[in-house]
Image (cartoon, rainbow, N blue to C red; front, side, top):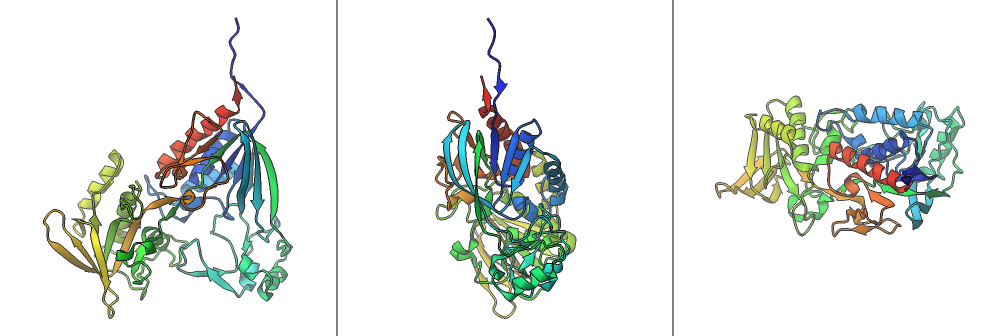
Length: 425
């Protein structure tokens, strides 16, 4: 009697989302021989990692991990990348899905050499989503220095204006096509991995913490961009109201997290992100005093616990166990007073600082916009993996809150699950 051995069948894998989880899933599947389609809604790959100054565990810049992944994608003929794409419809069953994808116009074709002439000619400025609205960029822009694909984008906001014409006239390579229109492509795939990622929780929804009301209250991801060399301040951490170097900073942990009115869960990365941000500030301003208001500090694993202990030894860093009740602004100095009750001593604390950073939580992008496929979600919007049914899987932060290392590990597993769907026994 002969055994039935697993044999590959013809089929492709669709990966939706070009962040670190999507990149990992895509490469793991393609590098063992499977055809992979990678669809990303933004005009670039890299996701949230591309917005970071450094990430754990080695405190590497994002170029450390993204650059090699971009090169691997570029060199692999099994991978087809579609940026500015959105999945509109998914029909079928595991092993046999029909997918419709809408590709939005970039208005710049493959002739682009990133010379920047269109940007120089453009006069219109738009808000930078990449920098969370903290600065303005031109209506013709390169998303960031090492963006992949390395190609400019013309904002829809200037299409039909004289500025758009100026951009086209400035281009020596006939790379700008103002007549580009959205189009739909149809793919047949055997498995789908949803790596749709996360977004920072909207801090403006947290009424008592003053975001949007007081200028010197920012979020953790805004601080990440301020510290980044390609950020709005070229890596200088200034407080927004007057560009002053802050001499005192308060971090408010669990800003909206573990709260039945906002995010009921722990976002896993917030404590470590704030500890990392402490290192940013201390490197730049050795005399700055830093206050961390927390419910409890969560540093999963030996390496992260060791990092936490090192921060605790800093005489200018003060940990206060207590949930922040309110914040107030001094209208003259624009300083912020943080009010909390010390859970250890029971005393009410009023700490004045020059800047406040809210450790806002991680919310799946699928919380508010559900995907056009037969998927299950938990009450917080994370996709629940149905391994028994198979065919479609969620990777990384589409499935649960996770850091970069955990997301990569999970994405590798989901690549294997997708491959198993394409294998007949």
